[in-house]
Image (cartoon, rainbow, N blue to C red; front, side, top):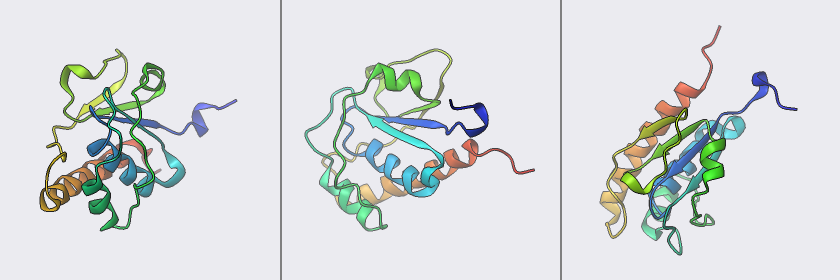
Length: 140
C-alpha cells in the first residue's frame, strides 16, 4: 500500500486535441522529473496523431514524443491527478473541486510553422520547470 511518504505526485496536462501543447508539456515533465512524477495527458476531442511540427520541435531539444498518441480525457484520470494543467481549452475541460488547477494560456501550435512552435515549446519548458519546483518538497 502506498503511503504519503512515497506518494509520487500525478500531473495531468489537458488540451482539446492532445496533439501539441499537452504532449510537449508531458514530454518535458517526463524528462525533467524522471520517475519522480506520474505524467498523464488527454484531450476532450483527441486528434488522430501528435502534431508533426511539435514532434520536430521537441526532437530539436532531444525529447522524442513521436510514439505518443492523443488520448481521450478520462474523468477518472482527472480525479486521480494531484495537479491538472489546462492549456487554453476553456469550458471544454472538466473542473473537479479540490484539485490543484493551473491554466496555462498558450498559443495552439496547430497549423503553425516551426519558429512559432519553438517559442511555444520554450514557454512550456519554463512552465514545466516551475511546476517541478513546486512539486518537490522543500529541502531540509
